[in-house]
Image (cartoon, rainbow, N blue to C red; front, side, top):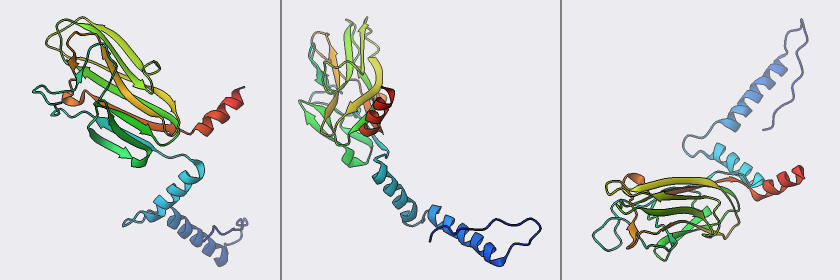
Length: 224
């Protein structure tokens, strides 16, 4: 039922039973609209779904990592990253992905490519780690559609430490259209190649949808 209009009480006059009953009806209606059905969650979830459908706004969070026990065929743990070649990082474990239809992952050249199925602004995170090396080298981490786009990117020269792996985390925002494909990329110049070091969750990524493209366009117009 809809909210029932009520008349204001008059100073010095007792409230009528009719107006009191309207208060009761409105309280019951409010409770019915906001109380989640404990068995199905239908009431609240339907209202949230209706709001998201009408506005295009809804959460979308996706988290992945490279499992510590994984090996690409040899005895060493981790993904082999050749020297001087941009390589997609493989993510072979899903931590969380809701709604699942917003992102789909496929394996391309041994790494993971994420296809975006929901246009908008996405916040992206990438934590990468490479196996220890005593010789040192130059390390580039990137999250994007192309390796030439350095919007979400880090570049460091590691002096070398045979006892410690090299790790870094990067994050930023990307404007992505439906059908775009993104990946986490690694480049280094250590002769012979290096393996990733996925132990303790050191190779992980996440993507979070934060705004629709329509909002970007309207905001840009307002600032012109």
